[in-house]
Image (cartoon, rainbow, N blue to C red; front, side, top):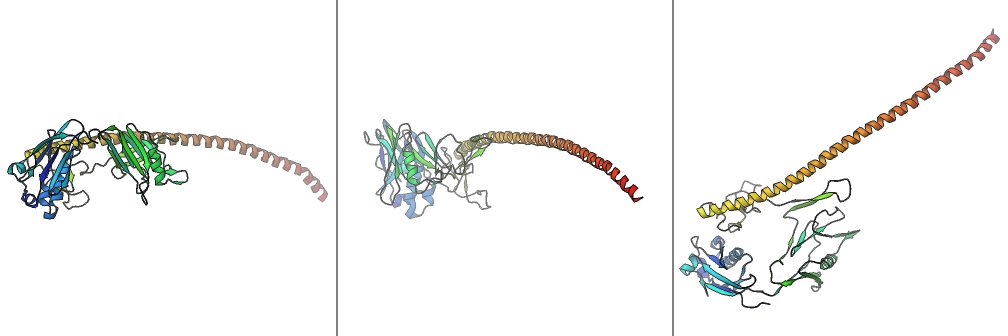
Length: 385
């Protein structure tokens, strides 16, 4: 499925070479002129038996989506994955200058792999998707919700995991997904074998991989819920609160070889900050010990501030909407109380008028009876005399 050989490079990584790597060594991989800095701290601090896997891991973290590294015997093979035209790989750094790292060719050119191939993948659910979890296929976001608990108020393409009286089966969810129409993507379901649920086959109708990344987004990263703010059905909005803990903002990491997301930035070699829940120093802060890392750290902090500010703005808008709803509810409560008071006053006045009328009639009746009783009493008095 490709029109030519991808750019490849073999890096020799035998035990002697791995054990010779020290904190002064540097390694950069240039893909089409873009520098990818490899953080070697994990390799240095790994056990001898784990150094090769550690090197492979840090190389892949540095490469991102532009290339991939795999083990090939005693070598690490780096292959480009970008789309179209020619690709170029070049190794630089003290490792290559000293000859510590031996490559079969320090600068190679080749055709990008999967240049005309169709991106294709499949997956299956081990369990029913949770309400609030999302599936992104291409540019479409599909969100699962539970109609037995709440009405969906989001803007994504929604799939209900509940079917009138009971939760749907995984096969039903896969069938519903396969029936969706998504631009530049075809979906179909297929049996995955005995004991394995039906899987969803996803294939791009365009060539190449770009724009067709497929991944599941769970409910742990962000808080999602629907809030009812009006008196009628469907009058609500979606509340989403992103994760802005320090390690999610890339200003701390649970390992020294974490990726801050900014060129030149790195984390300290020893844990020196807490996780906010204990007094133990268990996380690694951004390294500001050199001019280069300190300058890069400024960008990391700036990105973190922008993300927090963006979330604060979104939460501020939500707070304003909720305050408006609360004020409106207070006004409605006051109006209902006043209306109830007027109804009670009017009802009391009516009852008092009825009471007064009945009281007058009763008193008149008593007076008439008293008057009527006077004559028989007079006759009885005469007879007794």
